[in-house]
Amino acid sequence: MNKLWLIIKREYTTRVFKKSFILLTLLVPLGIIAFSVIIGFIMSRNTVQNIRVAISDPQQMVNDSLIRKNSEIQYIISDQPFESLKSGIQSGQYQAVLEVMPPEDLKQKDFKIRINTDERLDINTTESIRNTLARQYRNYKIKNLQLNMDEINTLDVDISLDRHAVFNQDKKQSNVSNVVGAILGGIMGILMYIFVLGQGMMVMRSVMEEKMTRIVEVILSSVKPIELMMGKIIGVGAVGLTQLLIWIIFMPLAGIITTLMLGKNVFKPSMSGVNVDQAIQQADSLGLENIMMELGQMNWWFIIPVFLLFFVFGYFLFASLCAAIGSAVGDDQSEAQQLLLPITLLIVMGLYIAMAAIRAPYSNLAVISSFIPFFAPMVMPTRLAFDPPVWQTLLSLAILAISCYFFALLAAKIYRTGILMYGKKASFKEIGKWLFYK
Image 1 (tube, rainbow, N blue to C red):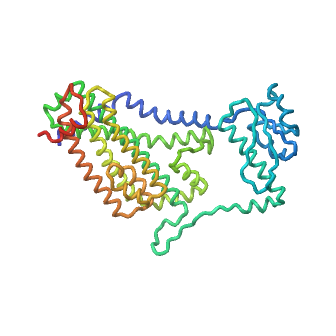
Image 2 (image 1 turned 90 degrees about the vertical axis):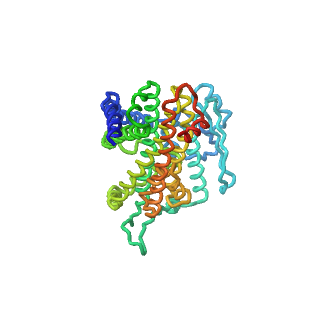
Image 3 (image 1 turned 90 degrees about the horizontal axis):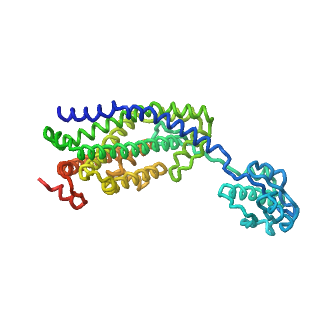
């Protein structure tokens, strides 16, 4: 144990007190602030082409007051046919001509409008023109069907579900519980993904560096290979955890500064399939008071310790495999990437399943994945905010702990052979033989 502690201390101190570590730890929050400001500035800019579009409207179908509300594209309405307006494109008076005609059937839903232009219109500009015409046709149909606009607007309904327990009188009866759970689950899953992948690769690079410099031969004269491997994993993990805690402290500061500089609702979330950003928008509409009340009712005494256990076991599982890969390869980075690819795919797959579990935490996919050790470190923490059955949480944790111990033993067998082997390319078949060496 004394030798293991010395290895952990060496791995930790040699990294934490490096100037590069200190600078990186301090500069990352500043970089996030700068990145957020730049992205916010870009997102707030006009992304539609600045063009003039003539609308050929001989039958005076277009509502002039409504179309001029569009400030992105300048529209010129004319009662002349396209043939008369064609010369305006050639002279540069406008860049496109739209030919609109009233629908023959007011019940028709699909319309194909001809746009005459030599310009290559981008997606945003095309979408803006399409939406403008859709509003025109809608209002034309409402007017000619003699419908009342106020009555039509009353047809829109916004439903919110206010949850009340019947027999199980728990505290979570607020309609924001799912929103808060989605936000917390998303944060937990992403943190797990970043930490496990980043620190696991750091362990692999550290092992490769010591092998290539032959330092490991001197160290192994005093300690066992399993002690060296475990000391390296724990030491590097402690370094990453220290950095993560510092970032967690500074991240709220980065968010406050970004909000003060750019104002509210600058960003337009676009993470396809994740729905965490959508949950944040819903939370914003539900009010801070309800959110804080819901957070106060979370069972933090259970969530935080269990999350940390999944954090630790998940890191040990993947870091052990990364250490084994680092010992099996030489200075060939491409070879290391090939062996690391299956592990990376498992981690990425686990993240996507975790994102699906945010939307459906009690689905068969989420429940079954919680018991698969390669997915459990990402999937189960995202479900903790939704109060899964305690037996599922404990069973998932037990399976992960046993798997962690099993794969650590396998990694140690690979490590003890591969760390002293040079000049030979390690294949999966060769690594499999190392598991049975005495």
